[in-house]
Image (cartoon, rainbow, N blue to C red; front, side, top):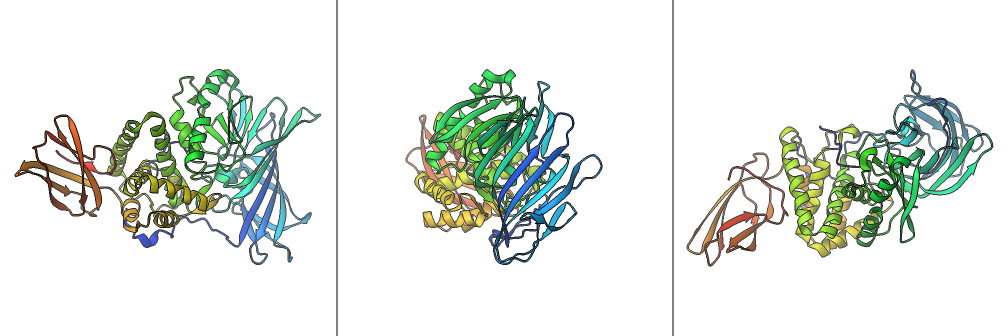
Length: 530
């Protein structure tokens, strides 16, 4: 998801909390949704939708009761369920507290299919509105848990499933959705059926449809993955131009991380509450992202990075969303570094660093904040920018070769699966041979960052450096590069900071003209005073 729009939101936890999460969604891990087929009928006369959903369920042990999320009708909005079928016969179910509770019939079959017929007007999740050009439109905007407003589903990222959208809509609309188009048929009643199928498992948070008048174009093909642009006809030329860079981004991430998981990569101008929403294989960008000035490249890189991190390797708990947003933030920077050089990396990190400091003064909390129960509150400068900075420091700690090997192994291990922070740590430790427990604990589970006051002088062939950590809640341990400047040339020395008040002598032949702390933006700390 784009860092353009964040939600503004103190506890310090030990590393043993890595696998624990506050996320309060009631998970039923004895039941695994295998596949959804969402049949939807859209119309121009009203905002009411009619749906018929087929849900294929795997019971891992015994056949037991399970629930699907669907917001019930209340006033103008919500859904009414008219029928629930189990393998072709009436199912035993109840519909209360926004849950369809199904009690399966006794059977020895571990896989069952259920059909839910329903109708109503969604308040959220499916945005039924007009585009900025006044054209009627329907856009799926599910993040984080809004699919339940229009799709009967397990509306939490821990249970992912393959998905098919069967969209029946007036025939003047163009339709794009999660997956690859497998059918487009004009019906004889002024309607058109369009079907998209995605075989890879997808979380409901990143399933989507886009239905409006589109101009669309194939802009690239990378390793057999079609890259397309779907924009409003009034923005046709600017949109095709702006979104074409998506092919370059996709190629970079395939080359550096691993295989792309989804059937296509569509880039869609859309009505969305976010700057961008990383829907699997069908990314939504805010309407005014199209300018023709090609300024949207960082946003595109961020959302495409999510296809690996957040979409394919998906956080199992909302409190670990940095595994999605922190990764997308930093891998966008890595892409920009590859195109524009290391100075661009440093520029981006310097901007992010200041935002981290400003945020902390008002919101003193750790990145993995286990006090948060509402998924709408997990997004913050911590989970985006600070999460990205943690990866930057980890890269420097391990070195480029080991860092990238670890990232590739992490993705290969958890592609199309779910993860917690502990899982990431284990992979990076296996690859690097290093114990990363204290490193990740202090940066992810401890609030804040080092706040440093420092000074230096030169005597008897030594730079005498004094560093004080002013924050009172924790003493951080970290390497710190010292740039020693003499006659316009800089020499880098690295010291280890691990005390609240530390005096360090650095031997050097000549008196420096100046000293620069962390000239290459590798360590997150805030200079206070001098």
